[in-house]
Structure formats: C-alpha cells, structure tokens
Length: 332
Image 1 (cartoon, rainbow, N blue to C red):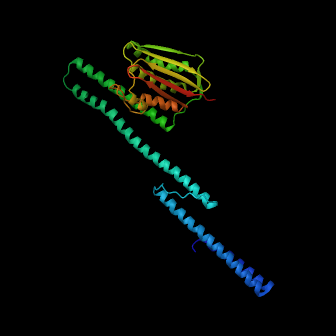
Image 2 (cartoon, helix red, strand yellow):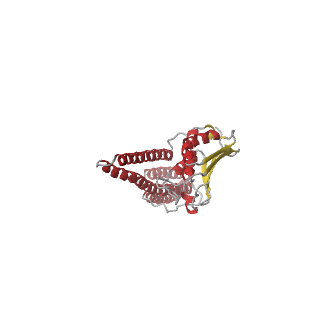
Image 3 (tube, rainbow, N blue to C red):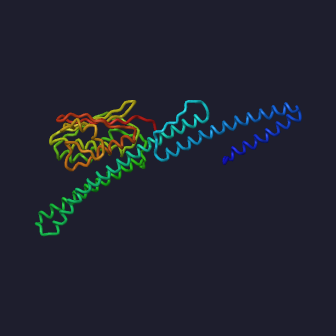
C-alpha cells in the first residue's frame, strides 16, 4: 500500500466501479447494477493480482541487482518468455555479463600492475645499488685510473636508467592511448633508413653486415616516426644477438592487403620455449644479455598494434631469427 502508483490505480478503479454500478442501477435496474458491480470487482481483482505479480518480479529483480552490486556475477535470470519483464531480465543479464568481464579484466590489470611495478623496481634497484657502492669507494683514496673507471661506470648506469625511464614513459602513454598516431602515407624505404641510421656505427664496430632491399614504391598509411622506433628496436635486438662478423638482412614490400618488413639475422637464435613470450614486457630469454631489460620488443609490438599491425618471429637455435612486421592497409 506504500506504492503511490498502486494506490492511484485502486482509487481510479474504485471510482470507475462506483460510477458503472450506479449507472447500472439507474438505467437497468437492480439486476444490471449487480451485474456491473460483479464485473467491475472481478476486473479489479484480476488487475490487482496482475499488479502484485509484477511487483513481486520487480522485488526479485531488485534483489538480484543488489547481489550484483556486492560482486556476485554468477546469477542467471534470463527469461525466454515474451513480455516486457522478460526483455528487462535479459538486458540485465547481458549487463551482468559485461560487468563480470570488466571485473575480471580489472583483476588482471591489478595483477599486471603489481608485477610491472615489481619488475621496474628490480630493474632500477640493480644499477642504483651498484652506483651507491662505487660512490662510497670514490670517497676513499683510489688511483686515478680506478677513479676514472668507476666514474665511467656510474655514467653508463645513469644512461641505462635514463633509457629505462624514457621507455617506460613511452609504454605507459601507449597503454593509455594518449599518443596521437599520424595517418599519412609512409614509405617503407624511409622507415628502414631511419631505423638503421642510429645502428650503423655499432653494427660496423661488431664487424657485422647489414643488407637492405625492397620495393621503392612500397608504402602504407601510418606514423613514420613511431614505426621507425618499432623497427629500430627489432634491429637492435638482432644486432645484439648476432656474433662478430654475422649478417643482418632487412627486406620490405607491400601488397593490396598489408605492408611487410622482414628482419633476419645469422645470430644465436631463440629457444623454442622462449618464442611465445619474447614480446612480453620484462621477459628475458635464455640468451638474454646481462644488460637486457626486456622492453624493446614489447614496445615494438605495442606501437604496431596501435597502427593495425603486428609482429611475429620464427627462430631456430644456432641458425638465427626472422622477425616479420605486417601493417594492414587502410585508407586515409
């Protein structure tokens, strides 16, 4: 009786019953009046029972929503019958499924964030500890040669920390989607040229050879600068895992579906058990160097995914690796 709509309905039906019964008595006599009264009372009873049944369903639905609010997503109130309440129940169930998936993803994100913070802390703790020890030694009496050696080591560690922080900031911006990627025609030849340029001297110092070939007209629609950064991380990885005198090959081409860059090396290769994880952040394979952080390839994949692309790898230990970058074609 606290339901105002229900009370209003009773009032209206009471007035209608009174009016119909009065009209029946006045126009048709006692028999018609009693008949009108009986019909109105039956109709009123059916209406009240229908309203109470719907009210009971609403209470059940309200209880269901409270349980969802408390985090219970396993309930199922789908109703295959026809009617407005059935449609409402199905929509609520669909919403519950979406909330369940979001809650599950949120839990995964929290675990990932905790793992990422742990990895970052570990990556920063090692060089910081090393620098603290060498700083204490520099305060003592050391030969000039040792002092210069420690100073250079500290500088190298600072440069490593600077690179790590910069890479992490880029990754966080990529994850947040705050980096605006350009949508313009990009030449694959120019992408490879920009990616290879900063690595030419290190490759030469290692006695490695770099072979580049491809179609001059090959192109795609995307961001030149970010794509070049994705490619340079792959080239750097290949160079670091290729021995003195080894070779690195870069080929590029396009077709109506996608643009492709294939980077292969004659290095030590990747172990089979490492292949599914080398694009994961902070993952270090069995052949990873002591200075490896495990960010470069993960960043490359993130950049390519933001541009409707992807990267895959094939490798055999002792026979080198082959990375294939594909960026799907799209119209400006």
